Length: 222
Image 1 (cartoon, helix red, strand yellow):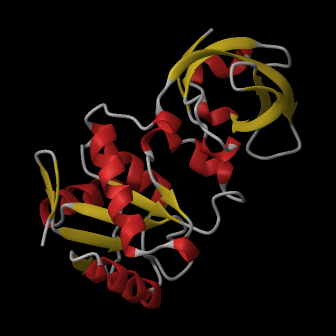
Image 2 (cartoon, one colour):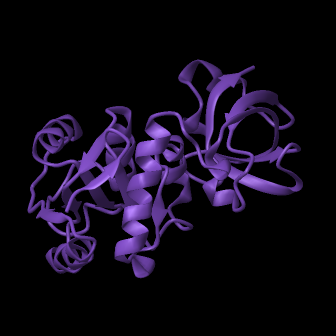
């Protein structure tokens, strides 16, 4: 039975994971959610080709983040895939147990990742909830923790010993006591040279986020 959210129908769900056993385990959750599981065997090649095929063969996707650990499964990671699918109006959920350790790479795409679930916490209801959240956000209906607001941000320090270069920033509108780590690459290239300690700028941020790893940054103004 398809999942219907507004005018969007989800029936076929693509499973993107470089581990065949993990794909099989995820398929059981998809089936238990009364949806059809499509296990992507790979190799998936480059991101544009993958996205083009996904749009034709499925209605939604579940992606692991680390897609290059086994063989040459993909030339991109799961966060990139979910973000690109989101940009095309295609709901996708990112599943990973490495959200904290990989926050620097995931943060680059967090604005377009409405639903991130720990792999160990995946269940049919959580996946359905994730798809619903994605569909609604794509249509402009944000849950409070994802709604973007224009806010002031101050650079606390540059972590020059971390590669690629990373910053600690403070968001007074979110928490004046919390330092949030973001990669320099999140900024448009024309602004990166002017970033230094005590630099202030504005960006769209989901100030309703409860955890710093859920924060996204978009539409920068200096």
